[in-house]
Image 1 (tube, rainbow, N blue to C red):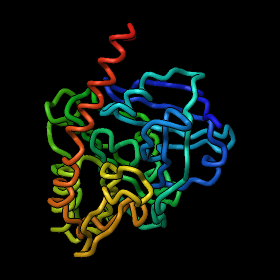
Image 2 (image 1 turned 135 degrees about the vertical axis):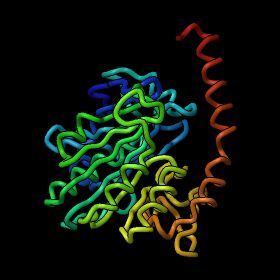
Image 3 (image 1 turned 45 degrees about the vertical axis):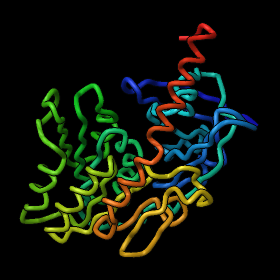
Length: 283
């Protein structure tokens, strides 16, 4: 079975968006869940990707990914009307959605992609949505227009000041938490170090905070053990127990050490793939 690519869009230098035909997943997926994807049906690496959106009527799901290793580089080289060989899901525990009141949603970089369907579901549950989107520079900012549509308040920050405010996401987050009417809860998705400092910020104001640790997942099934994290002093597996957890209970220092374990292998595989493409005359 193959899964046809209905559309492809490049959001930044290394971030791509695919709308893929997967009707069963589109009908059953909930915010916060992910799928396991492979370019080839019978071979190749299978990687977990959060479902960034779905259209049940068209039978399609939206995948947004960053080119960091061989598997994501292969996906980035696919074109509209090509197909993915394997999609399994939806997997993972869905986000708990209810009417909380005011929710501040903080996204960093590629984290905006998994944050969007969660923020959308929270808005549909009649919450007030305050969105903070951060990126290193304007070129790396994604999904701003989509967040504008569902946010009651939108704040954009960049590290270099090339767009929006020159600040880290924690600066406006602290300001929002300092308001007379502080948010009822927060959810933040992005680099581990960003989530860590967001949680330190909200903890000082007693604002409950959820984080998604999807970036540490490897095989997405709990078999490899690569996504072990410590939450509240207990060992959890992100792909089966999460991917969302109470951010105030996550041991981010341990998580960041574990995340570095595969970086060298990812880079080596990517370089090997690029060398192979050069040898056979592909760009």
